[in-house]
Structure formats: C-alpha cells, structure tokens
Amino acid sequence: MKKYMTRRAFAATTVALAAFSGISIASSAFAQDKVTLRMSTPASETDQRSVALAEVFAPAVAEFAVYEPHYNASLIAQGSELEAIASGDLEMSIASAQELATFFPEFSIFATGYVHQDAAHQVAVFNDPLMEPFKQKVEDELGVKLLSVMYLGRRHVNLRQTKDELTVMRPEDLAGVNLRMPGTDAWQFLGKALGANPTPMAFTEVYTALSTGSVDGQDNPLPTVVDAKFYEVTNQIVLTSHLVDLNYVAFSKAVWDSLTPEQQATVQEAADAAAESGRQAQLKKEEDLVSFLKEQGLEIYEPDLEAFRTHVQAQYAGTEFSESWPDGVLEKINALGN
Ligand code: KDO
Image (cartoon, rainbow, N blue to C red; front, side, top):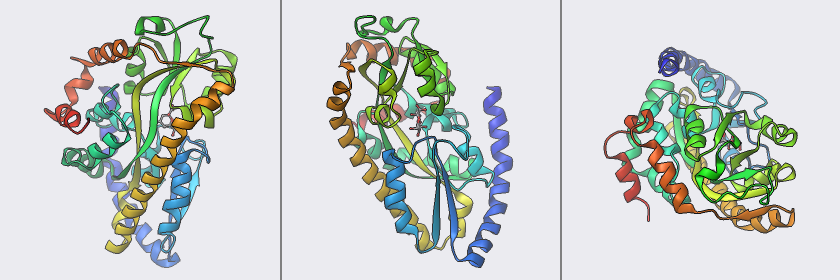
C-alpha cells in the first residue's frame, strides 16, 4: 500500500513535468524537424518485439521521428521505464501489466494466471471498451499512452533440474523450488500461486543466476528461453502455460500531444502494425522452437494443467489483487475468449 501511494504521488507530480517537457519536445521537434523516440527495454535486439518495433514501427514514423532503441535494459532498469516516460527521460517502452499494477493495482487482472487464453484474446480485450478506463487512467495519471498490445507468449516453468531429479505434474511438486520471477508484487504472487518459492530478479541477471545455481529456474515463453539462451543452463520445461503474457507499446503522452493529428494517426497505425508483425513472428517461434529445444537436450512435457489452473485461480480469490478489479471486468474478459 505504501509503495502504491508513493508511486501515485510520484505520478501526479511527474505528469505535470511531462506536460511541461511536451512543450520543449514540441519546440525541439520544430527546431530539429524530427522528434527522437528513445525506447528502453530489458529485451534483446533479436527479441521479436524489438525486431517488430525496429523493422515495422521505426520506418513508418521516420518522416517525423527518429526511433532510438536501447536494449538489455542498457538505458533504464527493468521496471523503471514508466517512471522514466512520466518524467520525460524516455519516450517509449514495452511495458508489462505487472509494472502498471504497481501504479494501478487493477492492472493485475491482466497479469493473473490463466485469464488470457491466447494472442487473439489479448487483442480482443485490449480493443474492447472495457479497456478504456484502464488506458485513460494511465494517460491522465502517468502521462503514458498505451498504444497497442504486444504478444510475449505462453509462460512456462523452466528448471535446472532434470526430469529424473524433479518431475512437475502438479503445483505441490514445485514446493521449495526457487523460481526466479520478475520483481513486482503481481509477479511474485503468481510465482507463489504456482506453488513455487518465488525469487525476485531482473531479467538481465537470470542467465548467470541459472548457470551458478542461485535459482532453480525461471518462467518465460519458449522464444525468450531461446533468445536469452536459458536453454544452455537449464534441463527441463514444464508446459504450464500459466500466463499468456503481453506487453503494451507505451508512448509518452507529452510527445503524443506535440504531434499533429496526422502524425498521431501514423504513430498509432505503426504501433498496431508492429504489434501484429511481432505477434505473428512470436506465435510461429513458439510452435517451431519445441523441436529445437528438444534437440538441445531439454525435456519438455505437459503437467496436469487442470490442477495448475484450479490452484492458481483459487489463490487470487479474496486477495488485494482481485479486490482491486473493477466489478464485472473479469466476466467481460472471459466473455471475449473462446
Ligand atoms: C521477465 O523479466 O521475465 C520478462 O519476461 C517480463 C516481461 O514483462 C518483459 O519485461 C520481459 O521480461 C522483457 O521484455 C524481456 O523479454
């Protein structure tokens, strides 16, 4: 609660600052002709979301904007990107619902296990009117526009132990397993809900932690397991699909306001096109990479999914997370699925 209040107070003052910097962005855009869009992400350059933004978004806005990506959290630490946009130190990021939930707890609904069913469901939810109050709040209170939804993929449990050492069929099999999860409350809660012992850690530290054994495992979609080379330092993947994970293309409201309506429309279309291109590439990789990972010697198997789903969903009932969800939103999300 304290963290939330602090962040909200921070948000209120930084929106004013961001609005002010919008004026200078507008005039510098005029002076230099083009606005610079610094984008920071913990993802690598070869991650499909990074590729989509560089290859689809950047050329589409090139007439009036210079896209300047920073990968591997080299500019802004993971989890601090929204604050950086709010204070005018960054123009874009690939933001998670978990990160947004640190400001606006109701965003935890999009970070809850087994809520989104697939990539199409994410898009339907993002474009549905149910999303409007969520987007509006982020814009008004943080000075960040959520332009589009990007598909990260189905998160699975990826462990150092061989299947002989530990076979995970049900949540209780994860008891005592030190599972690295990203460092916000919503992520940590999900790790606990899975039955594991969650350990917070930045994405850029995970490979080393897995190789030294300071954690037993991590959770991410298969394309990330390959892109970040986690397969080199782990032995099994339990296909829990516990979170069909998403990220939002987050864009500075101050910069947005400095653009003409035509430029705004171009930015919006470019973000949607990049998200769609990244989504298709990521879906294909999810399908193709199972055989690659098996060739690398990883054991990949499906656990008792019903046991995981039931257990995870039961953990959220009556928590501060589910209490923060606006009435009827979960039902609307479910109705947009299959
Ligand atoms: C991660 O830290 O495990 C995570 O997958 C969380 C996501 O929300 C996102 O930040 C992602 O890392 C990065 O984009 C790196 O892929």
